[in-house]
Length: 238
Image (cartoon, rainbow, N blue to C red):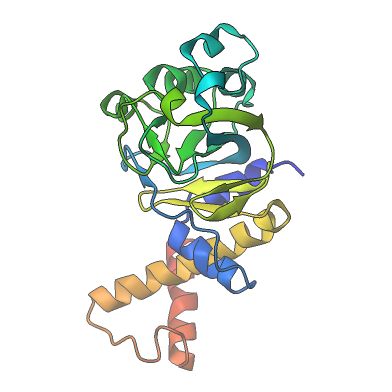
């Protein structure tokens, strides 16, 4: 299943918080990647299908600097194979003691049209990555080369990232708070519902800032709230 352009457009306009609630309604409670943050929170929402890279703990005799001489090295190959419009999601076992990638590799992903990159470890060159136009999420900055602790082993297989299971093709959305993973088969309906939820929450926020009580408003247990919301939507064109 490939991500529909109209679904991607909807997801660009909703928050991870709203998406978490939509998934919770469907029994999914563990889709928000734990302990990752955007290097540049001012960028627009990151939306794309997951393309994954998995690290295991490095075995020193198999992980010298010379491994990068191999053009098929999994980390380098992942950077060159990640499809334009996809989000590279890296399983670093929540270990930020060594970098998952650095500024050069993230720059290459950006130039190839990749939609974003997420690791539950850390990036080196993070000040430079923060200036790029590609959304990037990590746990914290990490200067040591990945080779000191991480051995790239698999590309585009199911992984865990920040305690969340990620399958290739799942839909990944990032905003200023963090990153959520939507199972591919739910993306269309969740995106549509999230747009509706966002409209209602924007209406509620406006009314609360005008001084209205949340009782009967949020949730909309009073009929007047529903009437007011319908009028608000008509006036706002939403």
